[in-house]
Length: 113
Length: 113
Image 1 (tube, rainbow over the protein chains, first blue to last red):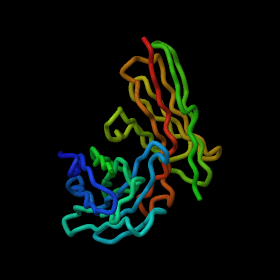
Image 2 (tube, one colour):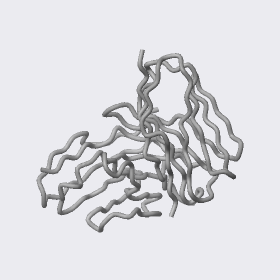
Image 3 (spheres, rainbow over the protein chains, first blue to last red):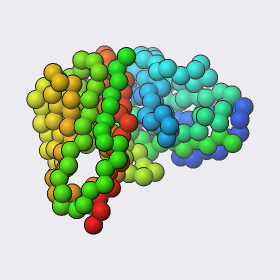
Image 4 (cartoon, each protein chain N blue to C red):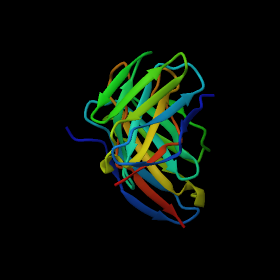
């Protein structure tokens, strides 16, 4: 079974630009969550989508947004990039079960210059 | 607000020694997860602990959960160099309604020959 895939793997942008990251979950998984990982703040929850609906959102500014499509693929968008947005962005998918184990993709390394 | 604390933050061990990583969390939850992250890589799921007293073992790693004490431990037996990585514990904040993991700070484990 193929794992979670994320594209692109690496991205370099400049301040003020916007970026879109993509995540394809494991087949059959309908929940997709996004996390930001930085050396200073660690792993932080961004948001979670289930059946095209945002179910939960972390404490991030409105510049961070996301969506999920009918095939469960998800995208996250960051507008007006800041230097502090440089991070590893991880996507995770969960199977429809009672214990919500999350399986992580390889991540997208975003560098903002 | 749920907080998850891990200690130690850094652990340097000699091969063959035993040690324990501790994970404390601040509010009631009966779902705790352990992940491993190698440098520059994504998160690999190690253990899912779903109830008080749960104990799981895989190779040289054993994880346990005490929900009353809000404590989980990851015990390493007879460490080998291949176990060198960063280990994270994570707690499911909402208890299953949505997939929102709150991560600990991580423990960087370095096993020296």
